[in-house]
Image 1 (cartoon, helix red, strand yellow):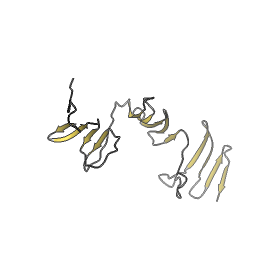
Image 2 (cartoon, helix red, strand yellow; image 1 turned 135 degrees about the vertical axis):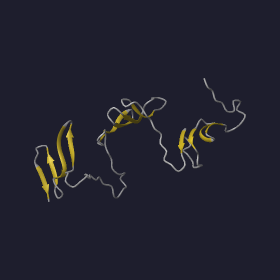
Image 3 (cartoon, helix red, strand yellow; image 1 turned 90 degrees about the horizontal axis):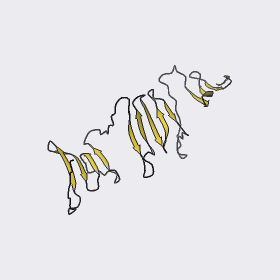
Image 4 (cartoon, rainbow, N blue to C red; image 1 turned 60 degrees about the horizontal axis):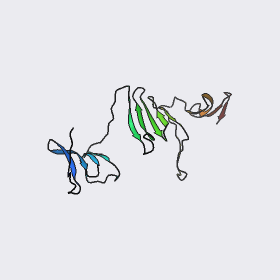
Length: 178
């Protein structure tokens, strides 16, 4: 066992354990248990953040790396339940799942398609310019919103070409508007 201690007797306030590499500080643990990786520029961190990472003049990432058939992620819990939500990346099928209230609520698959469980709300009721845009990669592809009853497609709203709006009901009859 390796035990590192700072101010074992508690006689000095604000003690730290500092880790230096090649003469420069790389990490510290302060008396509140907060871990800082990198260097503190003096800007405030959230007071409740126990893990802080900062690097001057460069991007900062926290990387979670697993075997290519194992999941990795950030999990959130509380004192009543170890897992209430989180972000889980599934390396086996290259999908990102977002969990809330102990259930998967959103998934982005390897093709970039997003699936939501529950409602999707755009805007907060006070925005004056809220909209949803469907933009294809080129003008030769039709766009549409598809509606399902279970696994059966029951309708769609979309464009037939660049000038027509198509509303297609389950009967496959199109309604065109000029």
